[in-house]
Length: 100
Image (cartoon, rainbow, N blue to C red; front, side, top):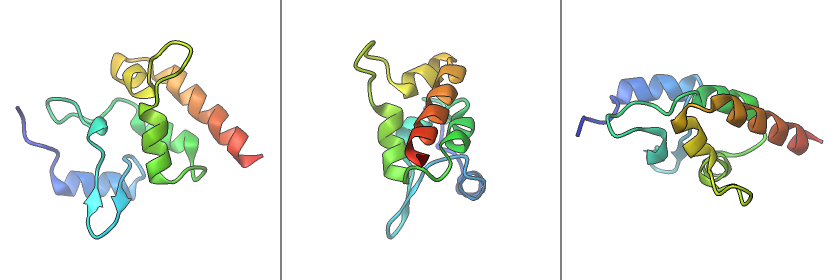
């Protein structure tokens, strides 16, 4: 079991909008963003950029882990398996829908 990402690294990612967080009294980072070795979820930054400001952080987290009713696969699982293009396309479509 490797150590979690360093606070400095997480802070830089928050400032670049490359990770989701929830500001309460402390910053909370949903664990789905990190793999078993502390690595970051591949292409999450691209997904967050595609979603832009259309969803709040909690909604983004739910959208990422929600299982598609058609195939039972979540966006998280797609990203983890390397299918970032599908998730980025879905995020782009979701953002377009929410902006109209």
